[in-house]
Amino acid sequence: MSLESNPQYIVTRRRETPCTFSYEDVSVENKNKKVRVYQNKFNSKVFQNKEQLNHVIHDLVVNKGYLMDSNHGGKIVFKHAKLDSTYTLYLDNLTGEYSTKYYVGSLK
Image (cartoon, rainbow, N blue to C red; front, top):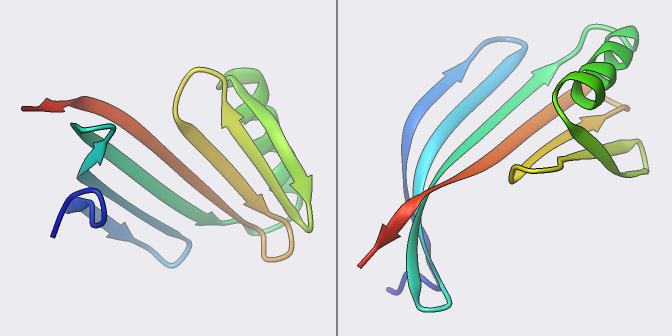
């Protein structure tokens, strides 16, 4: 099995509560004949009411440097201007998902 068709990863952290879920992994990917290592983070959260979403959006845009990428079908996607990071809000079920990918280094 090659890395190109089947990236390899190992979960380094996983945590779950009734309202949150998060995990981190380290993945090895083969792109353009270069083997690269990434640290990936994913978090999701269930909000209690719609008023919280206004505060989340304000924090993402004003304090954390995210820009709105799309808004349709009850889904708002924010992307960070400098990082490989995405925050998605699902308005229908009041949830938010955050994912980011950090480049760690290359393998020879």
